[in-house]
Image 1 (tube, each protein chain N blue to C red):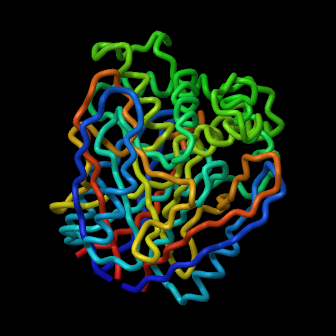
Image 2: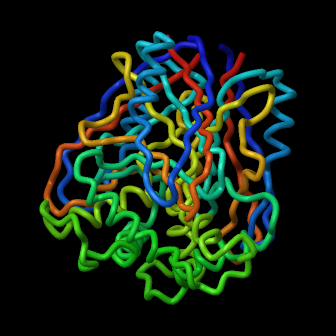
Length: 138
Length: 138
Length: 138
């Protein structure tokens, strides 16, 4: 087995989902991996990674609304110096998760038909975000 | 180090937990892995993976009830064409997670005494589900 | 590529966060890993792993309060023999997650500036906790 590492960089536009599926599969092909494991870390505490439906965009609208309810802006947080959107963003990041590990088969991620990999921005303002990626493969 | 990949297939019976611990450990022995890393991806957006207590089944009853409250059926979702159980299933999948990475020691997953690995079905109807598995090992 | 495994043991002091970032990076250096993947499993069903802000401790105060609301103690759980803090601890563990996979670059975890890795105790009483770690590296 061999390995490769890389940083992916994205500019987000405030709250929402950036699909990164194609970038990841392109890197897998570029490296020449047939089978292996792709591991991802979102290097931030107010943006996360998730695997969700890539077809109907309404799913992501409802998902964002659900996370608004689970971690509301007006919950009297102790930590509020960075704005009312900061602490909810930390909570949503913990709930959604910072790391993913995805088997690679036949030169691509072994995702299901309806699955996409998303970087999920939880802050109000646009941010530059980095994802650290590790690929072990043959 | 070497690697192996495999798809596990399960038929679920509607909402609930399917314990897959034994199948995974059996595969590890079959491959002949002494030490390594087992990585799993549930290839769906309305079923998830979780590690939870394998002893008292009441824990899983309460866990399902908690997720019913966290992602209720009647939250006026935009996405509802696939039924009232569909969008809650997506949210529960994000909260529980689609991937796991489990160290292997002494020819089995290094789980704690009370831990089991579960496929968690979030839809009302029975479904055929697939889990992509990757094992790197010596 | 080569691999190494290890158990990390911690004594918790009841509910709260134990930062384990330095222990993990020390092990990576000890093993002599330049690049690779660190995978972690918390071997318990009432304590979890999370990556969160390492700067302002108020973030962790708010995070704990948020999880108190998401999985309250008084939700009439079926499973209550082990005390009113037990079932909420299971739910919080599922929400936060039991496993992490973190790319290693330049002889340390490729964490962002503000990220720390935490063992999160969800039970009221102090507990001895174990984390199984796997490192694949060059």
